[in-house]
Image (cartoon, rainbow, N blue to C red; front, top):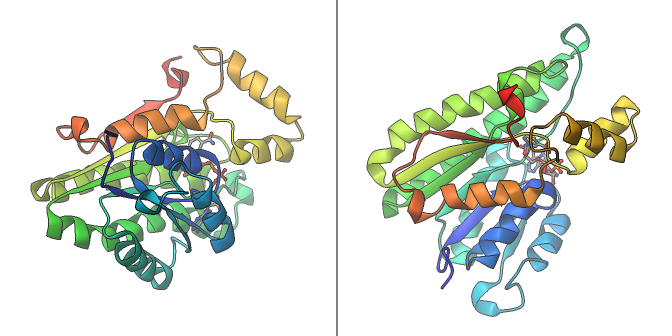
Length: 257
Ligand code: NAI
């Protein structure tokens, strides 16, 4: 028996990185997973690589969808319900960065980042909650970040990630009476394409950038998608049904210093 047998989990931005790690863990523990990402062929490829993909009862679904676009989000959730037979868990993980110091940050870079993280989480949650409320069951997990606490060059990202925490608390209050839990995880440095891209932008070799971040972390290593997946799946499990509106920092103690 897996913790998520019979459940359908939607994970946005799951074609790679942390989202794929979370999708793997859900699938490993029995869920059918809808992998949502910008490019449908990448989403389908990721869905086909998940545990259980070869068995008809646990096969998964890949959907191309821009989470910041209402016209894309609403049909995506309806496809999940019709093709996988329901929806029980939503993980709002899709994300981008457009870093720059405030005086160089463009309107477009502000809007893009707020659009994907904050508007995206809002649109996906609004579309999914209809089903959650009707069935009096649902789990929502949002991806925040240690950058929510402020980070040089990330005014847009930091605002979006702290916004996610406010959204999560409000979802906890509004949706709690309907059997729905909403929580967030706030990762520290996780080794993915996103942080590798940051290294390249800063002109630092990827391995050196990871090493630098590991050395300054209390647990002396960088995080992996599996570290985030462990926390995310716990918060979406029935064992965590008395936890709602919370943000759990999964950062190796990075913000303790
Ligand atoms: P990543 O860049 O490896 O993957 C992000 C995924 O989101 C990609 O597959 C991308 O195509 C997808 N995506 C982007 N815009 C989208 C849109 N509009 N609609 C649908 N999908 C879209 O990033 P990573 O590192 O896996 O990050 C995942 C989440 O974790 C993000 O929300 C990120 O902000 C957050 N996070 C990451 C940290 C890290 O150190 N990697 C630290 C803290 C938070």
